[in-house]
Length: 117
Image: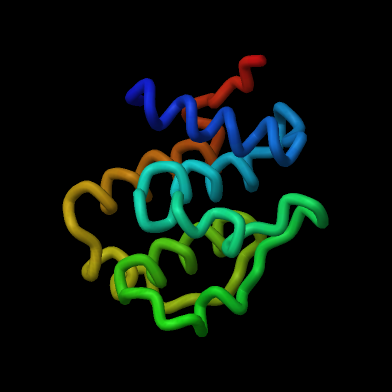
């Protein structure tokens, strides 16, 4: 994990007050942190005051790959219904594909993201 990605995830976890065992939010935050367009939309994707996702972002005219990443992140967060797994993965470039794999690994407790103050 790059320093930039680690710092971004930590920023989101700190802002949210994410519990150390909350792999659902951590996996969503991984996807938001690893994509520059999503990073710029982070406050529209996730409501940090109320601690929930904002599905209205999917209707805002964002590009297809960003929409797919958000849908995958929402699915990892709470089971949000999305396209088939094959359809989701087939539209991703190599970097976003690897980003989703890392988010899946977080969600499945195969890697740990530890919050640092």
